[in-house]
Length: 105
Ligand SMILES: [Zn+2]
Image (cartoon, rainbow, N blue to C red; front, side):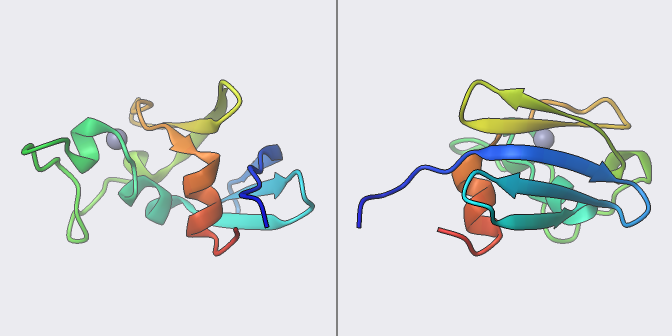
């Protein structure tokens, strides 16, 4: 089978449950817990780049602001960028990455 590229058709921030809910173009639905999402931030500052290690790992303790999702913006046609309550908004989560994290193809 061909490598099908799926896009997020819709998404919603659910503050009561502290999850980001994504509805995909194939009907699949996945949810991402805010803290796990923030811990997985793929930006260079958080996850590092090349020989630079980055500032976030499994032991990082976050503030409430750092794990509170304020807004989510689409990035071109390939991903989403969450804006966190502490102002951090440089992580681009590609649809491919989000699908894989949810166990979807
Ligand atoms: Zn980051």
